[in-house]
Image 1 (tube, rainbow, N blue to C red):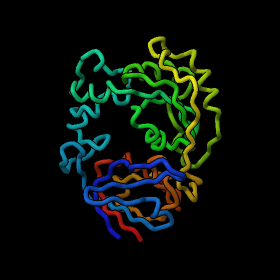
Image 2: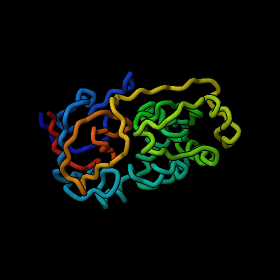
Image 3: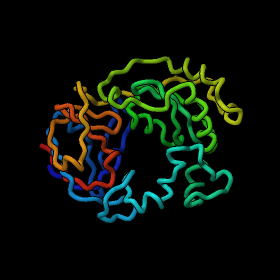
Length: 264
């Protein structure tokens, strides 16, 4: 079977294991069904996720111009503490920013390779955890806007990591932690403005990924350097396809790239 389309992050469904779908403009592929099959990925051209033009992708699926103009790529995306919509202050597009920033947000703990703190919109739970390859996660606070979530994350990352060791995550070099205990310990560091939103009693969410063979050494596929790749799919974790030869392919990193995908 052959498919062609522009890459965007895989859609997911929380199940045991997680179900993955690669969505193209005119079709979608249930990726779990491809485990143990041979896939060929070939880069065809660019397609900016904003303007749709065949322009070299700069970051996050956008060409250079759109990355610095689209509200979806504003600095507050990566740094929630920079959000200003609650003050009625525009960054790039106040209407869009209000739509996103002035919604309930979750500050959470996720364990992918180590326990880390993160922020996501409430509607993105548990999708965000799946995308990070977390095998367990728990909510800490639920706040009414992105700014409060951001300042909470800034305060907590003084006491817990805010990054994932993606290589350890992919090799499944992980250990279970008692996230309830960590959550309760971190309560003392939550800013006063966010403390009323602390979630007193909840339990961990556990996530199982469809992997039959983890890589021993991780080799990352770069479509710019290797525009044609062929390998046997052995698993999916986070937004990564894991192949038999230890190659891993981060689908989300290559958003905006049009590829031919052949399955045999």
